[in-house]
Image (tube, rainbow, N blue to C red; front, side, top):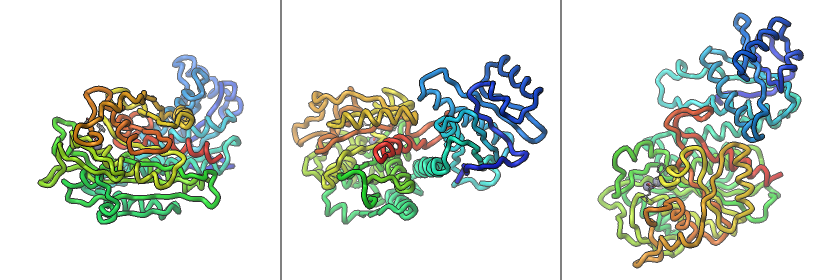
Length: 479
Ligand code: BES
Ligand code: ZN
Ligand code: ZN
């Protein structure tokens, strides 16, 4: 646990304090004396800042005036960001704990602010020699707020922990996290949260005729894995399960179509989709959401070797469809396709996949959102967009017109693994759709899955994008 968040009834004397207020009138309710209140009012007037502070010897007291300037979603995001700014400040000043006192009476305000603090308390220290030296000092946040229930604080800790588990997996390099290690990590997560996990190895994958996963794996020293993680409560709200599919390319060199220049940099991130789906399922199981969800995680690295798959190869996929390989760097869709057709056996209510699938998606909208498409899933897509706005993991929906499927027709096989030069994120989606026979949502997280530098509560490296989004989506379904 990076930041322990807990609800308290009593405020320990001398602890750092953070007041959340709706406006400066609330200052009367604080423990500030007259002079201090005037000082804060003056500070506010002079700087027009919404985060104000007073220092009493070694005690710091902050006041944050919650903005009403924007839409609800944006106001909540501002709270997360202010929470993260404050957290940075507390760490810089070597503070260890603080108590948040709420005078707004709004649970969503408190939870967003605290979430921002929690999410920004993440560090990847696995390979630091002197962990103690580098570790953030700020490690305990106490909340005094009538509007927030103990249960909600407990769930928030779980969700932040799930996001951090996802970030950890993404940040782990391929030398320590190959396909088998990824599967073993998911197995551990399953044991911790009470979800069933089955890991299939090369033999089983061969007997299932998962031609796409096996083709990508041909140039690899390490075997592929196909992991099934399932959370099934006794009387789930849904009759047919929701299936989540995550791209688990533990490293993408491009294969024989090798990535040139600096395009291979940080391609350890290419299993972010799998990490996200495992982490969402972990959070769902830990908080005992009453929905039946299954995650399918195909995993391998994409390397080049004497036996690596090559352009021109024609691969028979798990579904029986044949694929002409045009470019070995379009490997994500090859392994996802097998998982998507495998998903048909569950007769699912809806399948959602998450993948760092195309550079085109990242180029189109950058790191600020998720590129999405849907087939026969208009309503769930609307719900997903709402969840996306609420947690600020926003969704940009792209067209999914049938004309795009023309671009992946092949002369020698049923389809090919690459469209034209245009709309690469959409033709990739269309490729995946060929392996579905159920309502389907495709999430291309190539842009937001990994940050080159820290931005607000998102650390450098893996962000854990999609975990909070999908958790919010399923929470709504479960209620
Ligand atoms: N993993 C990459 C996509 C990617 C790019 C993810 C940048 C994150 C950041 C994917 O496998 C890939 O290589 N896509 C190629 C496809 C091309 C060969 C058609 C791309 O988008 O350049
Ligand atoms: Zn690739
Ligand atoms: Zn890839």
